[in-house]
Image 1: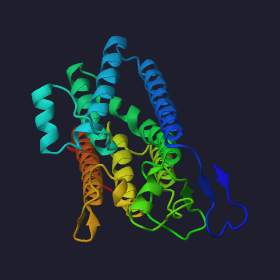
Image 2: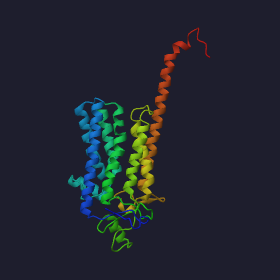
Image 3: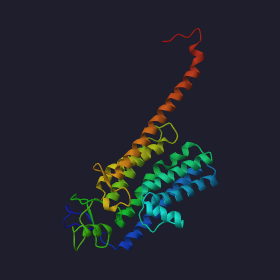
Image 4: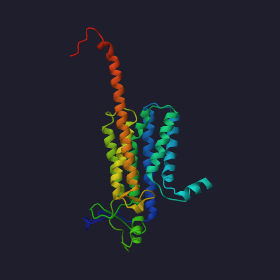
Length: 297
């Protein structure tokens, strides 16, 4: 990476490395994110005294489901036919984190119920998931895979020839030799999203009473913010969801929709718990309310 000090108002950084090295950076940060996530959850499982074997099975199966989910959401009809006929993934490189989150979360919830753990186990994911995404997106920044749209903002970045942003700009006829156009550092926006969500969840960790609602808060906020910053991602960098519907990307519709759903369920669960608590308090007070010497103030 080279920092442009001659004209910082034009572009702040240029990523001048080969695509192979960029792929190595991606793998390293992917591994760092996975290691951080695993260590955090193992610590949480020990702190909460969950059965060790059950907890390891839940984490392993959810991790595998996440990997599969990132691939499945990108499949078209021919990809599904290939999978069914050969019982193997088609030769495609596309991955979408939303698919991984959906399938991984469903697997996690299913196994939590199977092993009869409390719903509070879902909250172990609330902070670590957005932090892990923030770590992994640094690999995306260096690899140039999830690149942003062209920008004239001073924090824009460029990529040398051979990297995906440059290739896309070259095919569009926007550049010839030299680096790509200055583009939004979209992975940094995503990393800031993850850090923001983790901070908000930490601040609300003792305010939400219903078990599992911290995770709903985390996923809801992450999805809505991500839906907003998705406007700065180049549709050409999408394996899925870059199509435009009614002036907005398909991915934005999905993210905002999921975000509203998660936050809506959170509110309903909190209201239901409050109603249940009020009924319990009323039952405890009923003998006093019916006492002949009780006088309401």
